[in-house]
Image (cartoon, rainbow, N blue to C red; front, top):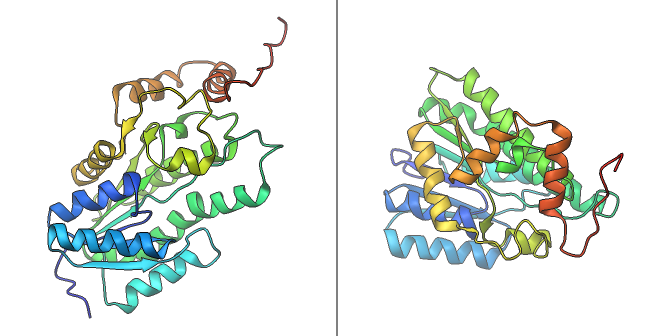
Length: 272
């Protein structure tokens, strides 16, 4: 059985990018880590690194949360080790880039399983023990959650779900022992863009992107402070505020212009 008197955090998607930075930040504070990912070598590598650098206990669990039954298998593997969580960080996520009629349905279904179903199921399953231990949950959304996103329509919608879902839980659990944070980073230098096949998007091509280490530390800080919604970076915060006051059609077209591949001709505004 695990030593459940120690603080334990589960970080999904912990093998790289923001998730790895979050795991390292927590480990530096003496918190034991359950690291998950779908690539065995990557999971074992980060587990070994965290143990060596920080002298903590690390529990590597290899699971594909985009597969049907993946979140339930993760929960059962954690439970079989006698672990109870103090922190649940639903960070794993993926994007699919391209117009809706051209993107593959299978890719979008897998994305919805990972971005939407996995955090929902994991919150449901782990909530009783988090309540016993007065724990904290961070669901990683995106600044994309605040507006529609042509060229990534399903991805943007999935992050809007995460934002709405987590804010609702924060209100339901206010004063009852579990704190919920929605973390909404902007474009970040990580493997996300390559996996989404969006390196040629105007949104990221040639842009100075935030570093994953900095963003990950900001996320952990926001969770520990109990902030309900945290948006790192002034430009990202201004974007989230501005879209509330602009006509929705303007917002959607602006996102299309910012996200389109460099060579893509954009439709003219109706009436021009």
